[in-house]
Image (cartoon, rainbow, N blue to C red; front, side, top):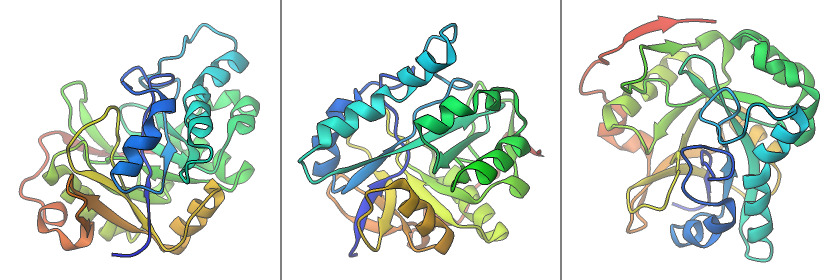
Length: 255
């Protein structure tokens, strides 16, 4: 398969409490795994954030973008692209927001009190952004149910390498049913030898707006990448597209 491979879902130790790798240390590892670049999508303040919530808003934002900035600085001169995104949480349902930046966050402190629909409308009204539901069928011990939001998302993450195949397959079928753009990512928190996910793009991107445009045009291919470097379109992998079981948690459709 030809194209440029990008990680679309990643976490740094600077901003995500669950992150084990500094943004400064990702470049060489990702290049060895075949990636041309990555989008840093740390957990925002309403998720598993590493940022002190008692800080003033501008200091919190500065801390939040620090992992991304360290990754960006470390990749300079290494033929590797680092872009910015956000993973935004509500009640266990999380969304990857692409197309907003540090300045936008500084100007929109009230997003912390907004509903899902209000956040969706805000990012569309004030930025050239998209909102993708991440790992929609994820099940964890701390989750009470699966919340789906078909009316307020621009796409579905159909392959998340950190989740079981059947959960990804359920997400894939959900994305097909909605006929929305599909994405894939590793949801990487630390170095590992496991399969990874990503988007194979037709050309190199150096600005997040280019990725947003590709999502809207459905130009990228969601792929799985093995440790050996074998890259396969998610749509061609039966275990990632045909669910082998139903979810254990109750499914709720919410706004």
